[in-house]
Image (cartoon, rainbow, N blue to C red; front, side):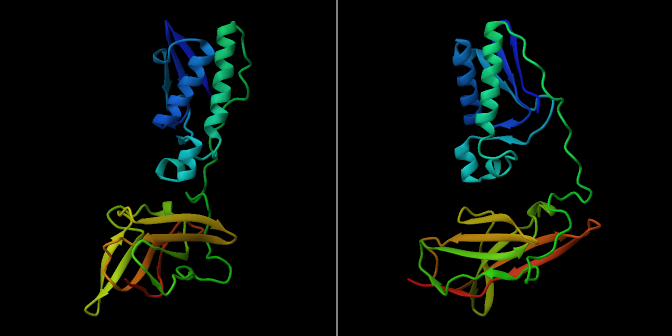
Length: 243
């Protein structure tokens, strides 16, 4: 990946081929300003510079696995690595030394079917949509429901205008949605398994949740070798919310 440090008058620009979070950018600026011995206001980060490496986050943001952290493709220590190289550039600039350009930046290898997982199959011994880890029989408000499904790579279909998951309560003989992936109380995590994907859905039962019978439903789309998508659906066993 190409990294640059440019000086225009008193302004120093750190060229980074990524979308940089606020705190990651501040840490990078502080490190370079400290090495150069210049005020922080004279050092800025310029993202999307000459390549694209998705997001650049702090290790803490990576651990949280929110949107940006989960889209950091080089792992937890991507920011420390880029900071290390940027400080080396700043030291060379301050000393007036030339540094070797290094290897030419490469282009990402395209995936024929558009999915980093390739053609998908369910985990060994399961079918798409099967429940790999069921919920407990009952929970109290404040507890966390956890269900694992045999699923598919979420980016196969971003489900605009729809949802990857629902939490439903049985009311008068019918299932009514009480939460989906637009609620803070729910989380969806994807993990690669040998021969498939595991989708872990959690629901933090709200304090005001009504007692009753509930279930969790999962929606996804699996990609075949030719690129076609097949809907994947899964429904958990029922569980109770009690007080």
